[in-house]
Amino acid sequence: MSIGLGPRGFRELRPIWRILVSLIILQQLGGLIGLLIGVHYSAFMNYWVGGAIATLPGFLLGLAWQLKATQERRSWLPTACLVGLLAAMLTGQAALSDLPGLQDEMRRLEDIAQMRAESIRRIDVFDRYGREKIVSVTDPESIHAFVEGIADAVGHSPNHPGYTHTWYVVVDGAAHREFELHLTPKLPESVAGDIVVKLGDLTSYFGTFQSKGLRPWVEEHLHAASTR
Image (cartoon, rainbow, N blue to C red):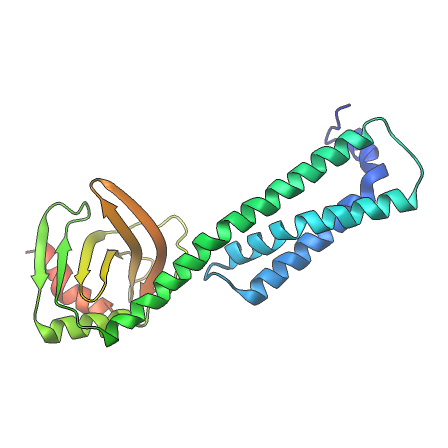
């Protein structure tokens, strides 16, 4: 039996309104808890993960409430409950599967500040595709300015970003790190960046950040070199 979105469809949903109410309330509570815990720098992702994980408990609570409150049976109710249960389980599983990746992004973002305590040997800067080398920075003072500048990096969730300049940057030190650094009119005083790993022409992304402290370094070493 199909359920439309018109008035008739809403009437057909009346027998399971308790399931819907429980589901909505638990999802909202889960989303708020996700925001409070803050496993990621993106508020949207925190809300999504919390709400998605709460979907299954919300469905089960609503189902128990529904079955206890009424003895009315509809021919489509068992099918609807089965489909709802599977959907709730898949939604929660998707959120749990996302968690390790989100936590890894946060660890990589926190790792940026660790460069201040390391010995960085050189910083190689390439064009956005990683093919043409623009400059190699080996001067200790310039390297120090880089690690001090980027240490203020915070998570950034750009919405339809538009970049005027992009560079691929490789930091060679105690640990190998790769970044894409961008200039964008949306951040006139900052640098936008992506934590990346390049394998040939394939680029994998592991988090986005912005840094005000890095802007002077980029202006001096990258922007100037690119416009010569």
